[in-house]
Structure formats: C-alpha cells, structure tokens
Length: 371
Image (tube, rainbow, N blue to C red; front, side):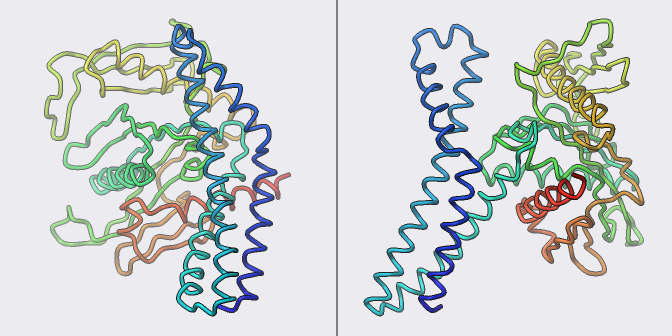
C-alpha cells in the first residue's frame, strides 16, 4: 500500500473518530464520570445497596466507553507516526505491519461507530433473551438449544456475564424455552436486532431415514429494567405457581418445589425461574423478568406495533428473519440485511458480530425511511 493510501485512510479514520466523539459527547461523559466518582468515594455509599450498585455500574460502563474511545484514538495517532517513520526510512517490514494494523483499527472503529447508532430509549440497557422452540418437533427444540449456546458463546467471547433464569427441557432433546440475561452495557440495543423467527434446514439427526427437516425457533429480546423505570404490579394481577425444577429427561434438580411460575393475569404473560435454590430467590428473579416483559409490552403498545421492543413472533413459515442452512449447502443468511456467512459452525459458535452490526445499520436505515 502506498503512503498516499495510508494518508487518505488515516485521515478518514480521524474524521470518523471525531464524529464518534461528538456523538458520544465526551465532555458530558467526563463530567458524569467525575460526579459519579465523588459519589463512589462517599463513605456512606453502601448504606443504600441498590443505589450503590447502580452508581458503580454506571461509572464502570462510562469509564469503559471513554477508555475504549481514547485507546482507539491513540492507536490511530500511533499508526500515523509509524507510517511516517517507515516511509522516511523505506522500511518495508514496518509498512507491512502498518497495513495490518490499519485493517485492525478500521474494524475497531467500525465496531465503535455501530455503538453510536444505538440511541434508542433502552438501547444502553442489559438484555433479557427468551428463546422458544417453534414448528419442527424435536428438531426445533434442538435448534432452540443451539441458539441459546450461540448467544451464550457470543457473550463469553466478549466477557459478558450470563445469568440463566429458566430452562424448560424438551422430552427427547433440546429446549422448549429458555430465558437468560446478558449483563453488559448496550446488550439490549445490540441484541434487539436478533428478535424474530430463526429457521434451520438440515438433515435431521433424529430421523432414522436421514430426511431433511425444516424447524423454527423464536427469539425475544427485552431490556432489563432500572430502578427509575420500575413498574408496579398489583398482587391480585399475578398468579404464583410453584413446582419442582427438572433437568433433561425429567431428571430432578431439586427435591423441593422451589421453581416459580408467574402469570400476569391481565396480559397472559407467563415467566418462570428455576435457577436459584430457594423459592424466594426464584420468585424475585421471575419478577425481574416479568416486569421487563410488561415494560416492553407497554412501550410497544404505545407505539402501536408489538414488535417494536418485544419482537413477538410465531416461529413458523412466512415470518423468518434468518435462515441457517446446513444441507444441501451451508450458509447462514439474514433475510433483512442480506448479510450472509458460509461458515454456519462459526456462527453457532458465537461469531455473530457481523450479523449484529448489519442488523443495527439496517434498523437505523429503516427508521430514517419511516421518519
């Protein structure tokens, strides 16, 4: 790559970083970090544990965002200096390394730029993900489990904590449904583009005749609530059922009725939690999920389109948003963005960032059209 190409590329990166900095409002970010730092330093901070958790979490998130931006800005400046020195000295090896570093930086800048597109009301929140098997019998249940693994592997790769609230196992294999939280800033804004029906085409491992099977699973993504937007649910609107937790094949997990199922009677919304050992803990966790889903439902109804936040889908023919084809050829293709991958195994192993970024850009484009 010629130095003139480097010059143009670096100038473009610097211009993009300047725009990102304006969108992030770095001055306001630094001001809030300073204010939160004072609160964290207060000796009575942990007298109110909920507020302390909120303050420390917000401070950690903002500091991480600022560090990410400044580190990337420094890398761009260092690259410019490295190219200048290598060009003056005619150092081909350093120029080759500069080209590799340029490619890495461009990818990082594109990823950071995507973050600036997450400006929705709840985009900065953590995410609650629910996966349900749809049409396709045991293959659909197996597919639901494959999707859960895909999202948890993605979270692990990014070092995002995952908290499983409920897993309902199918009789033969896989999952009927599962609900889990991904605790990371902007997890909701990032993963909300995954809401919809996912379709798998493959030779069924459960068919003795080796026939090709099409199966479906639905993904629902809602934001985790914060204290400031908590919603009250009268006790008389909730039916509480307790039952014994079960594992694959009906295997007993607990010997007491510790699992809890909550039904919101007015809307028919049902959530379950069996991850904790005590009934009290499971009820508290289930309430977190229920409130998040009711908030999503409320906001969606206000906007007059239920799929705005909740992504409620039928998980059957005609409404799929992504196809995973393993036979007769191998491809994963998003039907909204047209983004595709010829390596389904990598996708199922959590390599979904390109799909997420394409989805976020597609959504922003659709919002501009609607506006």
